[in-house]
Amino acid sequence: MKHAIYQMDIVPGDPRANKKKVAEWLGHTMREEKPDAVVLPEMWTTGYTLPDLEVVAETNGEPITEFLKKTAITYEVNIIGGSFANKKDGEFYNTSVTVDRSGDVVYRYDKIHLVPMLDEPRYLTGGKEKVQVFELDGVKAGLIICFDLRFPELTRSLSLEGAKIVYVVAEWPTARKNHWKSLLIARAIENQIYIVACNRVGEYNGVDFAGNSMVIDPWGNCLKTGSDTEVETIVETLDISAVAKFRKDVPIFSCRVPDLY
Image: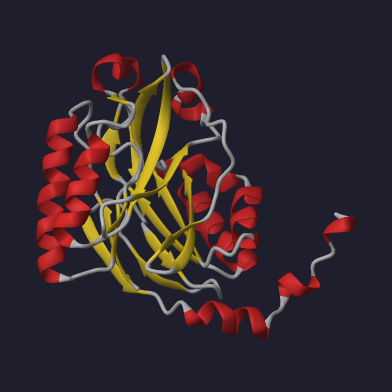
């Protein structure tokens, strides 16, 4: 399953400009790489322009969800749509949408853990529903958003439900870059899954973002890593059958004793 990750810089508070960036990137990437799935970063439509949410946020997921659906159909590609600011029922959420090749929404998720360091709790409401597994091309997968990475229970619960890939979409700052790398590798090793992580680059409001988008195999090997600062495309093909091999070699799931935890 071939993936292309868009490690992009984000134009603050300008959904139209960012949508144009993504559309152009997708057109080029599909011609050059022909991936099965593409991955976008967290809050890619606006960046962290949280005081302006009333103006820049989507409403009930639109029009960005329709854009993702039409694009998926045009290129016959699965789109892990990062996340975007989303107003629903009078509150703002950090929402992710995943769309399959047919343009069907296979998963919606509102970020559960809001990051105090970027002022999310002041402006956003945390998600109220549990993370769930979804399927792309017959492969079970899960998704978490940025700060969620610090809570290992989420990724473990997805793994126990059969996920073989967990996508991590983020705007992770450079100040905590070492945490980003270490936690991604840990989540892959402890759950024996592929981690496909998309982070942004650039700067906004005095915060530098770390890049280092990564693809990590179930043994904890970093198959591909993006740079610290450059806009780029990270491409890697995942051998999903490797998950079963790693789990056979080190059978942690059959050795669990959850009644004693």
